[in-house]
Image 1 (cartoon, rainbow, N blue to C red):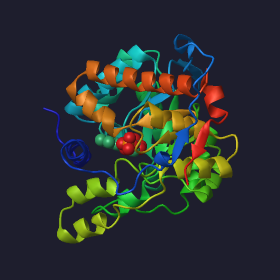
Image 2 (cartoon, rainbow, N blue to C red):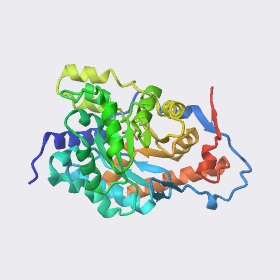
Image 3 (cartoon, helix red, strand yellow):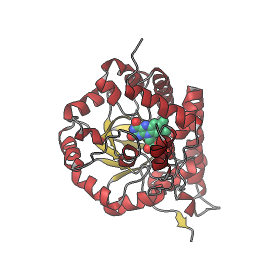
Image 4 (cartoon, rainbow, N blue to C red):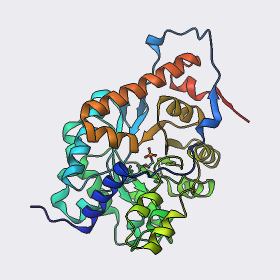
Length: 344
Ligand SMILES: Cc1cc2nc3c(=O)[nH]c(=O)nc-3n(C[C@H](O)[C@H](O)[C@H](O)COP(=O)(O)O)c2cc1C
């Protein structure tokens, strides 16, 4: 039997808590403050609405990302396989969860590499915590994560608050930007940086531009709250109260997209954090994002079956198509050209 390491145990707890507890942020994603101007005469045929795009050398049928979630345990392997099968079937992008467990226990690599086995042609992202660069990780670890799943790009996640509200978290985030910059310079594939649910500010976006990142995933507030997840796994009352205080923390996704667009013109932006349907996805794209990611909803779908993930993806894609149709946008660049109205 595979031995259970502390990282495996943490990963199993993360999945269980996300499935069984209410881990929603007290904030909304901010997209509800925008709406599309309805066009009664769109002069378009719904059948010809084009949601496809090219990104990092791959063709996608729709601008959807199954956001970074899991790996490292047997249950996680099943979830990763189902997500990847669905991504391959529908033609969308996928990220695996942090690969640290498999870097430290190579026998766990298959729980991540299963994704590439079943999804040979998808846009696939590797994942590591950026803070690990302050705890002994370097370019070789990043290369191992990429090679493990034959990834098209590496995502480094930023989660200072999550580390700070848990017992024994890795909280040394000092001088991390220069280390991210070094990885961007040396790694053979593009480097994407994401948050995990509290958003990217203008200041952080400017730092990331200087690092040379290829894309920023805002992973803003309004969806899964990692302080709430940590609250549910707190070992004592002190830590529980510490985490609970941050339920309303973070930059809502809509605001973060605009902040990154302002601070980093021309940067490829991914929107995630509380996106829950194809209309949220369309609004994110109209605000400036290239892809929209969802994590929590697809975790629940993947626990059911591959077919449930496919159905959820097809529904999201259809909602996007109908939104584009009803606001007169034939393709994604036309949607980005701005059909949104902000409510006061
Ligand atoms: C079960 C679960 C595990 C996650 N693990 C990771 C991870 O390992 N690395 C990472 O970058 N983000 C991770 N995330 C964060 C998501 O990628 C995403 O940024 C965040 O959950 C916000 O999206 P949502 O509101 O659609 O869930 C995880 C999310 C969930 C629900």
